Image (cartoon, rainbow, N blue to C red; front, side, top):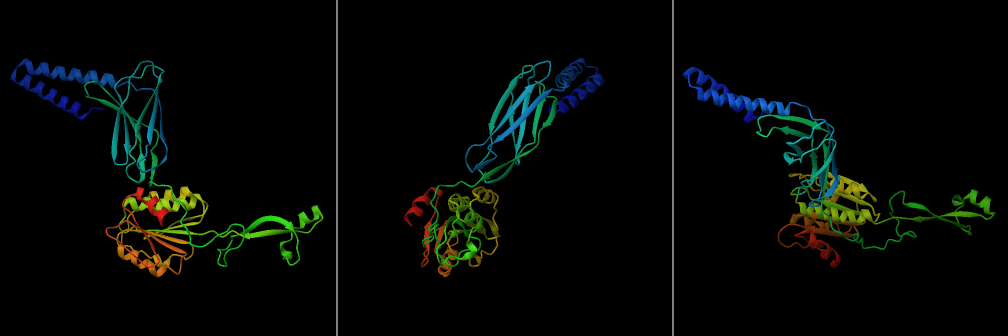
Length: 358
């Protein structure tokens, strides 16, 4: 197909030829002939279809914001002749990236890599990939698509933190409270029966095999829950990063995590760190929403990440519902609330020192 320059050359050549023929001057006709010959040369250059084997890989498919992600393009020329003038055009969301490919000798594999943008959190559609073969004058080009679009997920940037302290002792080898969530009483081991044991816990198969009455020892494996509330009414990347760091610390340690935003519940898991990061990767601002922190289920630790001083001040009313209440404050000025641990945050790198000190 003709490029804009090719169409301009064709129109100019026709105009010059008509003008020269009308005025009887040979010079415009010579220029027009030169333009038409250039177009013919360009069409011959790009007319043959290139036989290519193309594979494009994006690695990694999930990456923290600001870290490196690359696309690796592998091209093999299966034709009888070498190819030059090839360009790869790959789309990254709303932008397009162009890579000039080296000469491809016959039956030769070439690999080219180029960086992908990871400065913004969210889903970035990479592709489709287009290979463009143009003549040296840029008058014609041949475009062909290869493969399908791939989604690159840019997650929040996180920093290592310990699990948020709940303010109470939680022991995994025995019951610690009467308000453990349903389903946390689990099998621990088998032991010999002692007087007073519940006969419903007798393990009859093991008793028959050993000749001794054996009972199941059950433990209350209740774990402190970390509830992270992210204020998405005025969303900043530092706030998302802080919420992700707190939730990730609990999830990686196998503790239950509830993740809430102004738009409603976002995720609830015990040890699925990928779920936490994936959900926070696509969280968006919700201006005008109502941040209903008081509706969060009590127990464990409550961590509110907000830039609203008024919302941070209202946390004092939730002190009795949670073992510990923490506010990671990303707004201007200072905030204080009775019974609430307030951590001013300017950059994510400030969070570990604040977290460890408080």
